[in-house]
Image (cartoon, rainbow, N blue to C red; front, side, top):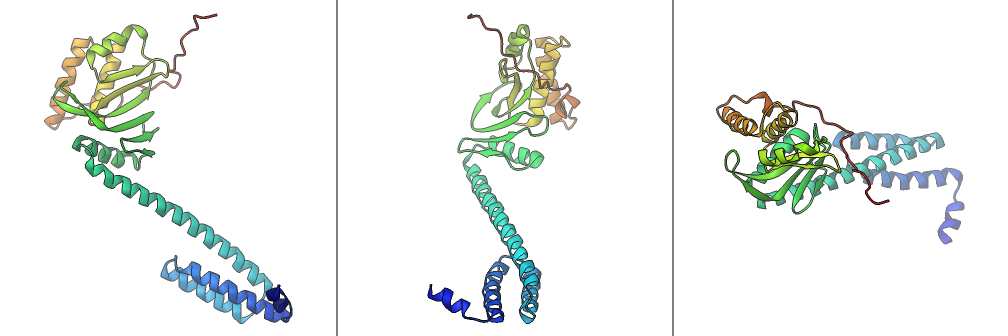
Length: 253
């Protein structure tokens, strides 16, 4: 109350000066988060403002202050997010090497993951994939050569019911979810997942038998190891199907 009486006892020009001085203090504080050039420019604006009072100028400065404060807040949110991501990246050093390599590969291809937990890293709708999941828990897989499975990559694709057993026989790391309409492969590299899924498509369409697909898998991996990567390991040779989910039919009336 005393402050209010004291303030209103000032003349109009004195009130304006008081207001500008307070505003200048706030503005200066905001300047510390900006670059040297921006900080210098902001100080010049305020100095000019204080030398020739104008409510229009004060309004302009208020708008600029609001803009600066909003930008500062957004910058802090981004830095906070980056800090959390850096902490998460550091945590990966305790993960198995295959998983670390897979994470590095996927970040190089698709950027930062959408989800990070103590046991998995997830990208959603990255490239051709519905989802990519890299797990800290890995599984040994001896086909076609001993390696550790840690990265599952999922497509939207409806697998005909009569082809399900053939895919199981082809590769135990190829999986499908009939209800959700997902077809996935789990390996240690994206190129190997592409190969497994492309050969699965050949089985589904009748282009190859299970035995032929398994033989082709080994041959193509050997080609890649020799420096001649086949097309089946470079891109998906068929289109995913967004109408893949199969809700089945009700048997209870």
